[in-house]
Image (cartoon, rainbow, N blue to C red; front, side, top):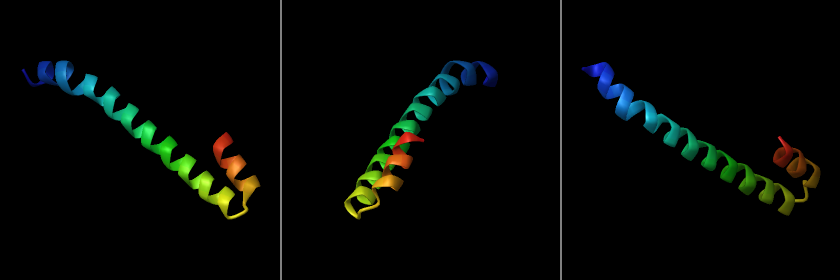
Length: 51
C-alpha cells in the first residue's frame, strides 16, 4: 500500500519540486550576475551566466 501511494503521489511531485528548484537557482544566478556587472566585474558576470 505504501509503495502504491509513493508511486502515484510523491514521485510525480518530485519532478515539480525539481523544476521549482531549477527556477530559483537560475533566478539567483541572474541576480548575482546583475550585481557583479553593476559593481564592474563584467567578465565574472559573463562567466557566471554562461555556466
